[in-house]
Amino acid sequence: MNALDELLIYQASDREIIGELQNRLVRMRRSCCFSQQKLSELSGVSIATIKRLESQSSQDISLAVVIRLLRSMTQLDGVSKLIPEVPDSPFITRKKGQSAKRISSKTIRR
Image (cartoon, rainbow, N blue to C red):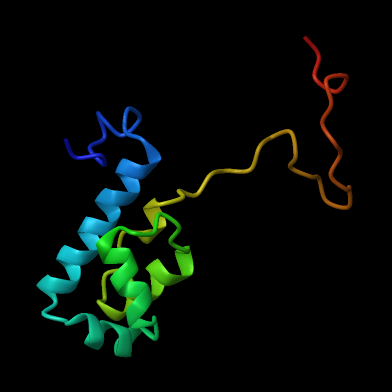
């Protein structure tokens, strides 16, 4: 099972999704022909962090670390899909010169 498969992702646990992302980072590093040491030097991420990430001994990976690793492997292309752009809610858009108003159940008429 690929935890990132669009049909299965909602059935996968957080641990499974993180594990698949970690596996992909390992395969990406290897496809770039980088050793862990070389990736550490290029990204500024400690080799200990890279080893923890690749051994899946840590489930807590910061986005900053992931971005630094992807940038050093020139693989930032899909990052914008991680959190897609969403249009502003019509409830919080402001007219010129007006401040935003809090939304409460009284504001929304049913």
